[in-house]
Amino acid sequence: MVKTRKTCVFIGASGRIGRLLRHSSARGGFGIPDMYWQIRNAGGVEDKSFIWNDFSDPEPLCTLAGRTGGIDTLFVFAGVSASGSKTSDADMEVGVTLVADALRAARLAGVPRCLVASSSAVYGESIGRPFDEAAPLSPVNAYGRSKVEMERRLAGLDGVTCLRIGNVAGADVLLQNLSLDEDAPPRPLDIFPDGQGPRRNYIGPRDLARVLGGLAQYDGALPKVLNVGARRPVAMNALLDAAGAAYTPRQCAASPHQDIVLACDLLETYCAGASGVGDPVDIIAQWAACRS
Image (cartoon, rainbow, N blue to C red; front, side, top):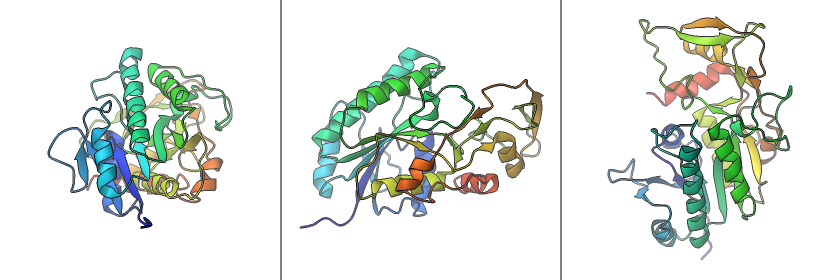
């Protein structure tokens, strides 16, 4: 019997990005009917959740693959717990090991495609132009170094694509705990000599779900690495303005930290139009939809 429905598994359903994507999935964002969500403890997030708390044990994934007739794509968004420090090489190494264990399990379960969350942090500070996938890697912190090491370990595996994701609206520090209460104190925001804040390639949760769904269902080989973000970068002050959130400008000197932006042309080859254009109002609307 020929299998026609795609079955996908998302590892990291309880993480910051995972929670946002579950909201988008509930609204059909992925376009994948058979999506299963990995959790570590009982009390699942939804009907299609399954417990897998030790990635070094492949049995839960292999059992799910047998029960569903095979898993087509594994999304690997697992990482260290919230208590882990992104400035600690030891803490970040734990995340590298988790991913490596999950990929070994995927091979045993016969999963042909794995999409693994990496980060734009692998590039480091600005080089004066958008980073494309061939740009040199020069991370400036433990988190970025761990992602480079993860990519190195996975480079020789077939069917594995590392996604160098920019900023996911609602998962990064700018919006994650943002209060829209009028009485909330304004947060400080670096403002550079051009009057703008830091610029990054944000992507809304809905658009990220569309990207992942498009890549999972792409009929053909994917590259080893892909930048993931909206087609145009957006300034953080524009996002706060779109959200109606107050901030206190903190004037800064010109810095290569202002523009850490990605060239996402290659992504368009595989899922044209899915990532959005980088409109701050639209990005904020996607974030707000996940809060309702």
